[in-house]
Length: 327
Image (cartoon, rainbow, N blue to C red):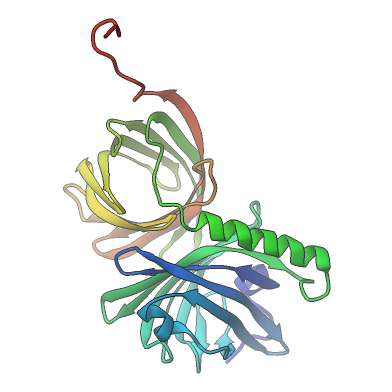
């Protein structure tokens, strides 16, 4: 049964969203783009989600995902507890946490099970989107990218121009890999919203990530979280191509990047506690959009998200010389 009043999340995503998500294969190779316009529309007592796509990628994934111009359109049972997708294009549900929805649903046309995360960043005017697409538990593709919203795109030439410029920037930026500062130490700071497993806002957590490069592909990291979550942990992280590893002493795990997006799992040493994260570099200033989900005894404990800003320190891997520098 649908609500007669739109949910808080439904109100937050009103308007038409425009994006150019990248299409990656399972190894992280960029195969192209998918031009998307989409909206979730509340009318009367019904919510309808529509999406127009234009796949611009190559290889076998093109044949799998191209819809030959057919418009996606499916009903949504809308609430702030669950958003249930009723088909025919997507069947499953999404779980809202304030401005974030964590969805899991099935696409009959693509024959994939999707794990999709959308986070709205009002202060940046963006929606940060990603989808992992599976056959059972085997990853076959990843979609990700940023979206902007309009309410007059069809009638306003200036709005159309702004969207075109944004999409052009996405085409350029989507190819950039998830690489943290290589030679400079510094820190990320910011405040994350914290929700519990009942989708209740517990409050906020202040985060400081102190970062020290050790080599061009390794760094020492200390994370301090205070507020609704109180944690401090350190680890050495390393990167080989688009795979990332975390080597303790406090957390161990790994991750894989797909363009600007990094998915990782980090296990806390000596306790039944872990962190599953999706981190996104949303600009050239190393600004991190973080979605962190903490698990206790393999059960959801906290869902946290927000933006962390980078403050650059000194260069710690500057040019080296032998002796007095005279050859």
